[in-house]
Image (cartoon, rainbow, N blue to C red; front, side, top):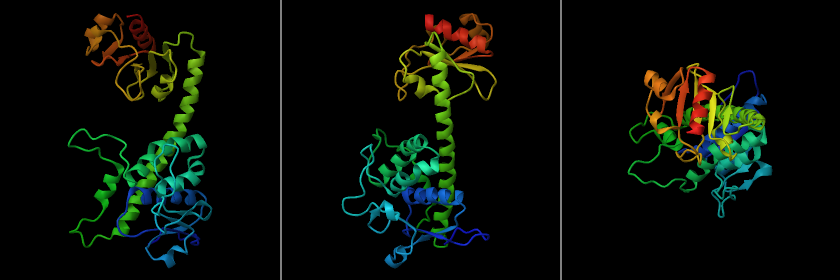
Length: 305
């Protein structure tokens, strides 16, 4: 089973186990593939449980019973495992690969840390049987691993090649990881911009942004902001959003006026007194206006209410 380019000579072997696949060996394959492709280094992915084959690998992961970063051996199934992340979660093969190569693949240490928390840590947790969430209902969250379970051949699909399905999963994982890298890099750029606006704002209860930055987690770290005003990317209008007491909760530091709840168009204009007001969410955390001036006015009224 190979990933090749006819214009290249195969030079690297990526070896993992055959049989059933999981998120950690899939994403470890994806991460290494992205790194090697960027360096224009050709490679093949080999799935085997033969120790003789393992010895031929340039990268061996999720198999072999050894973790040795210096030799690119990334297994975690041995007695004692392969250590824990700073979050106290045992590493899986993806976590180990990312620990060594994440900064190189993501483009910076900070971007790698974002992806480690968002993507790698949940994969590590799942693979090592560590629950990140409490299941309060008879319905469980649909995880990345469930996507790969769906891609696995069922007991009836005798004509489906599991190695081919594994490679399809690796391609999917590559696309996800590449998008996460873009998201992380752009988030860091937005963080600098939002902090700059915050520092320059006199009345820090209302932060007015000129672009639709992801601002919620950044502004939450400061004590003063109550509302953010920002351009709404898809509609060409302007939004006002309440800053949460905690970004993991739905509780606002300050709600918008109760009389605004659920209103829109003319009704909202009449009650708010803002000529181009568009709507207010009934949860009192989001409102909109046609213009930046109108949105700022809504935020000012909400602050003083």
